[in-house]
Image (cartoon, rainbow, N blue to C red):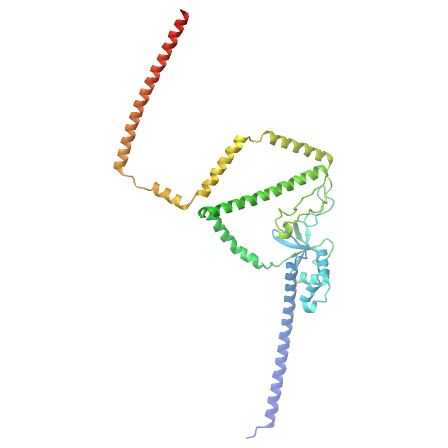
Length: 364
């Protein structure tokens, strides 16, 4: 049987209509996908910029939370020196630096901050370059280069070495607790290594303080070598940076320099006068060496042998025999003491008589 022509035309129209609706649906699905890609691109851009060492940043306290922040002018100079980061934005790579920062602020990847302390402290010529306390800038959340600070609002991805380090700390803690059961050679290696590292750190801090005091007294300059050695948040490169920062404070007065010179001389003289003598140093060294020897020579075998000796059962007959033996020994000791006392009295009487004869002979 032949099918009617009208039915075939209706089927063609329906198929063409369904194709057009499918195209429309695919087009409507493509738009949010593109928007999602744009959002991911800015998120990826923010993560890459934050992980890069070229953008100088610091840590501060903002509303009872620690945040990592940077300055607006540093972000502008970073984008000028690293234009390849704009390629991450794909379609938005032609945006200016201010527009990129404003988009990050709009997506809540950044927040503009302001310093809490806005007045100069006594003895300061200008405000701190990197304030330690910040607050949210309430007026306008837009990008600016002039004395503007911006804090990251998302959590930073931890690198692989930090993850491995988090698993390493419990192992290190367990190893420290098991130090008494180490072999004697391992104990010596650990002891002398820790003592050497501690001596190096204390010597570095002492030399650093002496250099600062000498330059402050003689030249009136505040020079701290290894300026970040005691910093809470610093990279490994910044921690061991040798050259000090530029002194931005006013030079000290000559009266204060003279006063602290006299104080330093008096302290040195007192320490020199009341220093311990050789005998005291020898006693202290002997005492410390005994403590160290006790720690190094301890072993589980000694501990177990001591516990076994303390837990040995005591026989009643042996205890009675021991008590009788101790009583007999006490009696014999008393008899011996009486005999020795009698002999001492006889000797003293004989000496007195001899002295008396000699005196009488001299008189006659």
